[in-house]
Image (tube, rainbow, N blue to C red; front, top):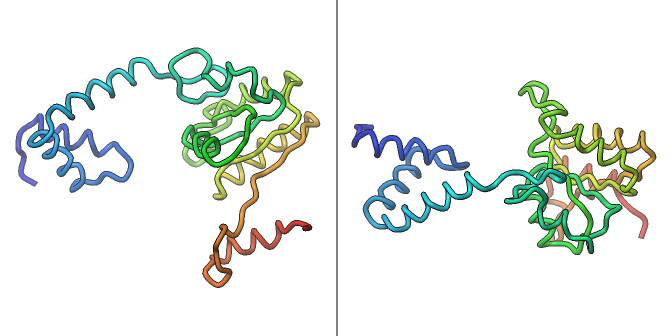
Length: 199
């Protein structure tokens, strides 16, 4: 594509760092901000800079927040003996919106992936082990994604908890509510069948 100038080219390239934004989407966003919504662009720039300056990670659960401890970790009304391990901060929001869970969280910010150089230290596992060693956790809920990497990560963390005699549970995987068996993929159906429960 022909260059429209270094500032425009840089903005298009910068927007491509967002997930799901390819060259065409970045081009549309750039033209929209510069031609139709400069005020929105300025607000976006300010909000992004403010967030980058002020947002870090909770020193306990590792979720994104603007203070040493997030609001959930500071909330003494939450159950202190349940700990739910998730891969991403967005998983915490999904659980909070869809369930009545009132325990604690630990955010890995990824999953084990030795080929990509992501080991236990990168996921904060030493911090998690320290929390497990504190003796306050009675149940560890593994809520990693049902992918090969997510399952491997859950297994690794589950073994750490079991070695400390902590009850380990895993989110159920299987057929979605309203799903029909003939349309469920074989991996999901197999997982649901092997994890069947008494009723």
